[in-house]
Length: 138
Image (cartoon, rainbow, N blue to C red; front, top):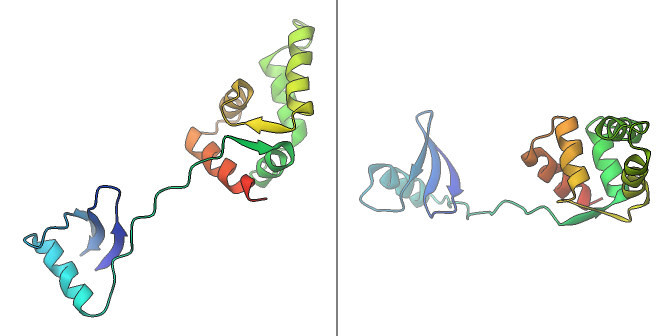
């Protein structure tokens, strides 16, 4: 048996005989009784750890280092911006996007360009959030 810890609902996440269970913290539950025996051996159920929340903004430097860590270079980003907005068809909008990208001191997580680039690089929101959290510590 492996006890992973409490979840957000107060249940206990545990793998028992190879099956993952969410065990109610109810002394009458047979799986909870197994966990109680495990606790009697001196073990402790790990407390609930909420998932970290992505900060609303990171610096451009943090963004570039974060992207580089997953194999996306600044040149690749700029090429995708050209795909998002054709510099020949709409030079003013393209120039505006490039200014947003190159001159930003911070990059907002909810900025439309971040959403567009996430789609362009096939990055799901969960991965972008994880990257944002990781990069914020750089």
